[in-house]
Image (cartoon, rainbow, N blue to C red; front, side):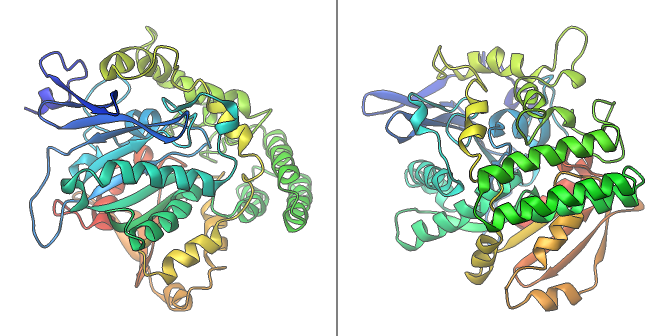
Length: 459
């Protein structure tokens, strides 16, 4: 039964076409285990989504079965591609079942956000978003289109789970969705927001890199001095409102870190970039321009370090080949990831802006906020995450910081896998042994964690 569910060819399943205004907007399998489609969030701006309904669903009136909306980072990285096939979806890049899929705890909704990412596309370059708020508005439009038409979805709490730059999208979307629910424009239960290794406060992260790497012997005093000098410049540029300049300086800082550390991997500081890392070919992710833009582009189109010699496992080939053929609805002239670089470039003025205030607003509204961080991540280092967390104005912060941590284990082995702290609606997970991609580096503890966050009946 599961084998049929995981089949990528759908050769024995029928597709049900859903029409809207005379145009096909979505498809679903006959058993309704999968549904996907486009929402025109603005004229000539099209956002792609893909919903998996869990075969592990547990019916419990006291604990409704949850839905997870996964938001990828970048900006411009594809949730439909990366989050789905590389991290938490039912199949990996070799189209083999993933034992640690988050479908064991919830339904999964992947979205290629913002428009221009992955399979999403714009017909006019002026339609790319320039701010996190604009991206949140588009996402809210998508949620209204999907949820308001499906009473089944309306009964399940939605948890917005984000990674990397996706965290900035998550908090702005959380506030936008909350308001839309209050205004009765969106029929949805907001369960909470989870921020995984998230780029919430760029200033705090750039100041964390030098001291952290100095303590790890990857930088010496000279390297630390160079790092601190550029970080101070970034701080001043942010205070002066020169956000594009801050983005350029950030790129310069990353280059200085790479040079003075002999190419440390920004997504796992225990290894060199380009080495056989346990992370998701992390050197190819990229959060930057110029020096990092090439590997960013490569990450969006392929995962070659995880590929077999025959080319199997290449994410770009997979999404532009058999997956595009399966989905049937992707326009012929749309290439997965074809507009992703433009997505990043149009957001350069927002890239370095913090979103700490948005986290505060969510907490003030009573929304559950979970923060989780991989121990060996550098780009969104735990040191930086803890720094921005301490800047929150939320009334419960000091009590939260004074709480003892609870150790986390996985399976029968009593080996510490992480720590957890919680007070009221704020929760924090420290995940040991994980880099930037927690679900891939520590799948067992990540699966337990997401079960706890969503209060899944299967947890």
